[in-house]
Amino acid sequence: MSERTIPDSARLNGWRKSSYSSGDGGSCVEVLDDHPAGVPVRDSKRPHGPALVFPADGWSVFVNAVKDDGVPA
Image 1 (cartoon, one colour):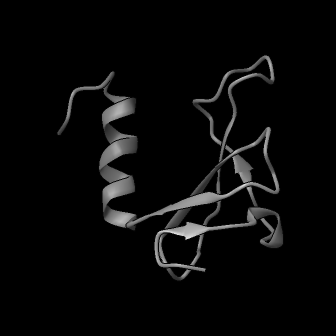
Image 2 (image 1 turned 45 degrees about the vertical axis):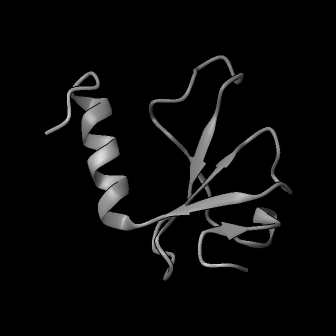
């Protein structure tokens, strides 16, 4: 595993669907909490695909911007 990617994200347990994902099961983003390298994010339609790992502080800024309708804090 490199610092910024996890090649096979299915090897990790505890993924949860983002509350901002589509409710119809189409566009689903999943995140993994409490990972030592940051916040892994993956496409739920590709559970054996890669996950991108974001720094926790950068992920918090992104989530807060989404909550505020895209207006950065």
